[in-house]
Image (cartoon, rainbow over all chains, first blue to last red; front, side, top):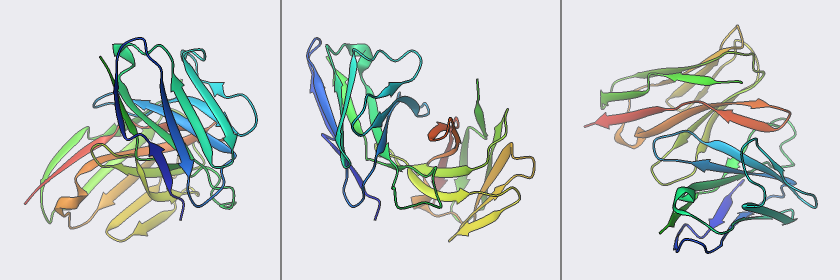
Length: 119
Length: 110
């Protein structure tokens, strides 16, 4: 149980284009999903918290107009990197919390990540 | 702001050796989580700790929640090649967010 998938697993795009990344909880429902970014040899940095049916909340320094988040259902959140530039190249990872794990409110289950390369 | 510092930063050990790493914080946490990340993959939860002083095992892995609530330790016994990866500690803040430690990179040689 508690499987999270991401699509695509990797993407290469030209500078100025937009890229959409999907995050799905496959066998559980998640009202909250999280988006992280990880640069090479660094830790995971939280970008935003995605809440089903409401606006995402962004961490300080993350541009909400550049990183559009939509959480349309209890099993799907999408991150769109708009007008991507080479400095946006990174490993983007989503996570989700299982509503049923009442005794483990802080445990997050992570997707396999999406490697974005902007040329 | 909050920071989770992990040490050592990296470890190079021989297969069969035991491994010990720790995570320290400048503030108190009520939960400690330990994750492992393989190259090109997302982190996988190894052990969750919810009580100060708690000692929890998962196979060859043992983790402890420090009494001060500002640190946690992860031990791996009898390491094997598939233990290679980056180990992260993580703690919750602002109700449901997680902050991740700086990571310990483990390399196991046969």
